[in-house]
Picture 1 (cartoon, rainbow, N blue to C red):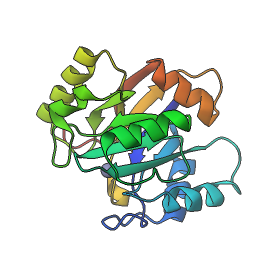
Picture 2: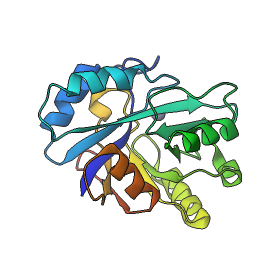
Picture 3: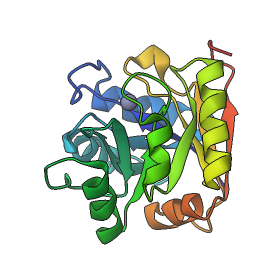
Length: 203
Ligand SMILES: [Zn+2]
């Protein structure tokens, strides 16, 4: 089992202030969360930087590649890919790209601004973010209902844009090993549980 924050932004996002080195240090120092998905807006440069920095640390932290794509219909996270999908960024194109590249699509904060909302039902996505650290309890509950009705796994991510917002929530992933592939496979299979840390302020 590994606890992961599956939605974090770095300075490579135009609206975030988390330095990649700080992110790695904070992850390394965290007592229980040992994996992070770097999901910058429309770029994978943050992931590559964090990955490189983390490679000089001992092996017990996991950096999951990711990106949060602003599609023409709303935000969509792709985990497990190290390159950007081709444009135009429609949900269909991003989902297809993820499939072809062994990636996994997560609908972040479906009912918040830039969320896909009920339109998420139309797409072959892999998971729904049912606990977003910067979203109200009511809107997270709606996301949880969406995941249930679509019979999809529900995951959690802090959606941190500042250091203070890191690790407010986590996804417990019951993977056979702590490799990126096995963690993503376990998420796809629904071997996940979401939880709040003591740091959460919205709940
Ligand atoms: Zn985000």
